[in-house]
Amino acid sequence: MRNGIFIILVATILSSCGGYKLVNKGKEIEVGNSMFTTPFNDWNSSKDGDVVLWTMDGPMLQQIIFVKGAEDGDYLIPVRVNGTHTLDKKVPKFKKDMTSIEVVELFESTFKRLGAQNLEISNVRPYEAAKTKGFRFEFGFLTKDGLAKSGSTYGILKNKRLFMVIYSGANIHYYDKGKEDFEGIVRSLRIL
Image (cartoon, rainbow, N blue to C red; front, side, top):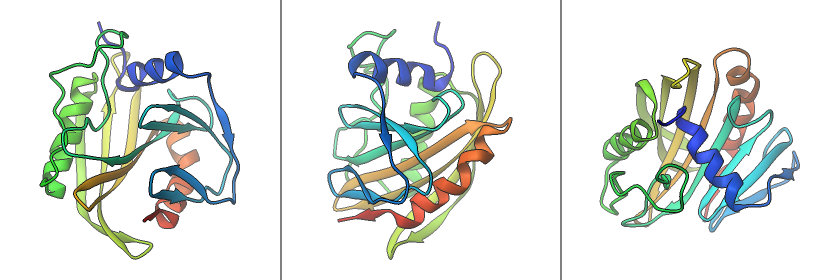
C-alpha cells in the first residue's frame, strides 16, 4: 500500500541519484532548461531526470518540486509503480493545449494517484511574477499516516510547455518555515 503523497516521489528520487547538494542562498540558480530563480535561504537539492526537489529539513517536512517545462505527453510528476522504475500508466499526462484550469485538474488527479487523502484545492487565480503571467492555487491534504500538509503552487503555460513550482510542508511549523522563501522564489522566477 502507498504511503503519503511524497514518500513515493522522494524514494524514487533518492534511489536514482547520489543524494542532495546544497543550493546557496542569494545566487540565481538554473533549475532546469529555461528556468531560473534566486532562493533567500539555503536549500538542499535532489534531481531525478526532469524532477528537481528542494528541501530545508527533509522532504516529508517541507519541499519544493520544480516542473521544468513539461511538454505534450509528459507527466506532471512521474509516478513509479511500487518503487520500481516502471511508470504508472494510470497517471494523466500534460497536453500542450491545456488551460490553467485543466492543469489544476491534472495536478489533482496526479496527487490523488500518489496517495493524497482529502486533497482540497482552493483560491485558483491568475498571477503574474517577474512580468510573466501564470496562475496560482493553494492546496491541503493528509498523508496516509494522517500528517496534515498545506501547499502553494505557481504555474506558467508558455510555448506549449508547463512550468510549475509546487511547495508543500507539514502544517506543524514546517509549512510556515519555508513559505516566505517559496514566495521569494516565485517572485524571482524567470522563464526564458
